[in-house]
Amino acid sequence: MTTDHSKRLDRIDRKILAVLQEEGRISNVKLAHKVNLSATPCLERVKRLEREGYIRGYVALLDPRLLDAALVSFIEVSLDRTTTRALDNFREEVMRMEEVQECHMVAGGFDYLIKVRTRDMEHYRRFLGEKLSAIKDVSTTHTYVAMEEVKATSAITVPKA
Image 1 (cartoon, one colour):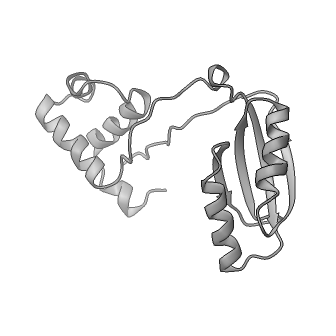
Image 2 (cartoon, helix red, strand yellow):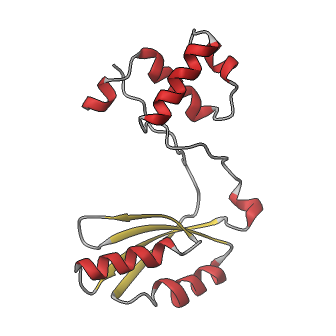
C-alpha cells in the first residue's frame, strides 16, 4: 500500500533512498553510478529528497558493546493518568534520559514502550529506580531484557512504485 508521498517518488528516487540507507557515506559519484545517473542530476535529486523530508539526516551506526551499552531492555510503562499534562511531563523527562534509545506511546494495556541501552544490569537497576520510576505519574513498569539481538535495522522498506 502506498501513500500520496511515496507515489511522488520515481524509480530512481527509490533507488537513491535504498542505497543511502545502506551506504550513507557513499560519494555522490558512486551513488550516481549505482542509480544510472550523472553526478549533477543525482546530487540535485538527493538535495530535493532532503528538502522534502524523505531524508531526515545521516548517522553512523556504532557498536554498543564497545561503548558500554550492550544490555538492551524493553520496558512497558503505565501512567497513573493520561492527562495532557502527565503525557507532556513524561515525554519531556524521557527525552532527557541518555539511556533511552526509543520511546513509543502505544495503544493497549500500557501507555509507553521504551527501548533502553545500559552497560549492565546494575546500571539498568539504577536507571529504573533513580530515573524512570521517579517520573511523576509513572505507576508501573514491566521489563524485558533482550538475551540475543536477532535483527536490528534502521532501514525502512522503500515502497515500490
